[in-house]
Image (spheres, rainbow, N blue to C red):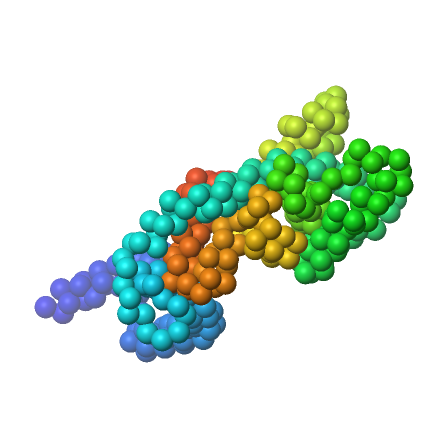
Length: 339
């Protein structure tokens, strides 16, 4: 019996040693499990304290207003008192069939496309220029970025005064002997939308330039040197190296530009106002919402317009996340894992 017991003890010790040699670990003790559990709760509490205020802010200032706008959109509500006059989808049907809203939607679509086609190439060329070593590069960067940080009120007021019929631009054209170039830049339906695009390009191209410049400076210099040694020209290097590696930055800028164009309001409202914008062909969905909602005293209708605008922006954001952001993120993770 003693021999068999000693044999069993020896076998058990051999098994333990084998487990240790194979890298096995013994189960954690109950005290260690308790310490892990306590650390987990502390970690969760820390995450809650850090994320909680942001979640409360998001729910209170984003989700709640959207839900309430959707609720009031089903009522004929004047902005005070309880909403009792339920009209169902009448507000939404009116919005989608209103020629004025359709025109505003078309203006927003035009601004989206024109912003991408005008600001994008100009910003890329300026970023390529500023990415080279040259004198005064820092000063030029600041001058290009300054319009972006100027208040929309200042920009709108300045351009509205300068582009009037008797404004500084027409006076300058007359003094230069070009009276044929004098136009009503703000009220002519054939020119007003292009005037708006010129103002938007002047103000927002600086943001795109700084964004693209940051992307260009993140490209390793060794790639350019290797391409130059292989005999590639400057534009071949940009086409084969800079533009492909700048792709994620370009797509982020395009998404931000689209969302900004869909929500454009301040410059149009300051320069043209709610009534002139409609006749001049520069109205947007937001100016339509303000004009037919708040200013008309029909807050239920304005809430419905806000919901439509939110849904359009949400669809754009979901499409971007599904087809663009996920691909860029997966590519970045793949490159990191390969490295």
